[in-house]
Length: 267
Ligand code: PLP
Image (cartoon, rainbow, N blue to C red; front, side, top):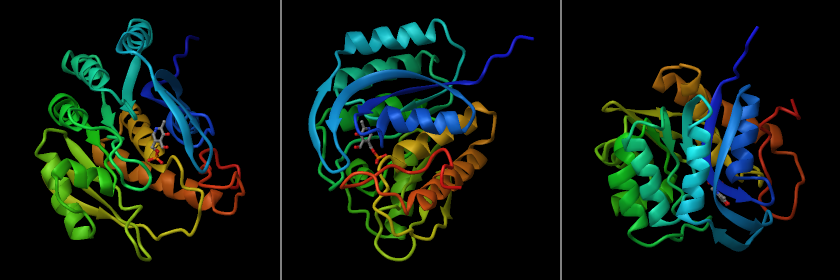
């Protein structure tokens, strides 16, 4: 009997500490029973507490990885994480426009942990014009949503307005992640086909939250690859990440922000 596991492609950066980026994506996909193919865009030297160095790969090398994967493997969904350079955003956009990136989930990694912009224009602008119109789901956090709509996003009402404004930029759905909202709750806001709704969540006290954004986007891609409808794919991904955060809350891993428990090691 011939069996082909479901293949999901992640186009993202490497986190040497293994908490975020490609490493989080691969664990998320493995936890969903899927094969992850990887196009690496940037290699970062980071611990759980700081990023010490980063080197972006050339658009040629990113393109060569993309073509090697797409010409050979039956990719069912694609997730993008840190793309970095305007050339790479445009390259991925060209592949998306050509219909080569099915079930595209775009995590617009545009700000650092403290909310500072990682990339100047034209990078954010190219996300909006060249990637969002081809995306099934776009998953900004609060800071990224604020940068994209050029307005503060600090309340659930702001998140709803931002989700609708980003939805008007062309994707089929938007998830504005509320993980950095203060208070007891950290709801996400979903805009899907013109309808806005809240995904409730109780805040978990933990320092192990690195890679939550990467993991949510990869889980959405995995669920879309499985054939789930968009809203169900988003809800199931939120549940997966919430469980992984709770499960790792007691872990001691490094001196800073540790990883989440993708594999259910802590039950
Ligand atoms: N991609 C890489 C390579 C990173 O290093 C990071 C954060 O450090 C991210 C993506 C975004 O991580 P998060 O899922 O915590 O938002």
